[in-house]
Length: 308
Image (cartoon, rainbow, N blue to C red):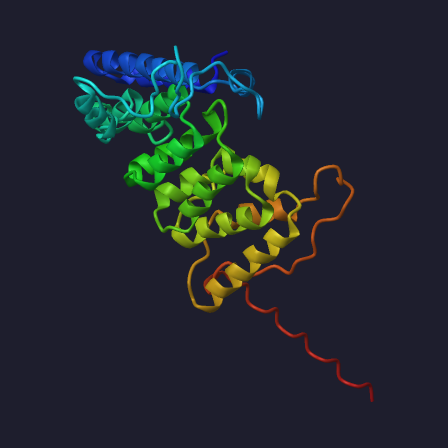
């Protein structure tokens, strides 16, 4: 059985033209190469401890101050002689800004390269999203890089970052990744909201934020099929049931229709919590879905006349 990422890549390659498919192979290979280079250039903590001498230890390196005496090595503090001025000027020049890593260039280029591979149905992931998720998985950017990519990216690039969160290995720092999820839930961009409530949010978002994410879907018209793990997290959540009922009453009182999938979420929230199958369903009062759907009141039976 294919893993989710392998299935995502296979489905994407089947929909790409030959030139775009060749670009994808090169982009993923260079992203993985960038990752290996970065890992090789980053010494581990144990290596850093071995390389750095203990505090107060004397080393055999020559002093950078002025050293006098017969046979002493020339001081590195002041250097004279031909070419010394050019070396000093070269050392004082600022370093040029490094170019973006190759994986980040490919991440941005995916919008042009894969845009023509239209999805055959709404159930198939967007090809640009799929390519960017695969690139991020191969590159495994650090938390700072990922945050910068989200903060400075377009709406589509931010969406791809959110979709990639559950697939990154090693995973990003929870505080930073959840900050991106919460930022997306504060927007009114329905594509960002749907992406933010994916598997990463289902596994890490606290109950308060997750409930408000579900309500945000209802406010903005995002179907409740978007929140991952809805059946598991909503089951037996009486606070969520209360929030859903309050929202439905407000809509009904204002003469507005209630989203159709709210009923499903409310039924899930009224279920017994896992491991409490004997617990009765919540006794929250029902609400009319719409004023026109409310049943008429039954006729009042006639009072019997007193016997003579």
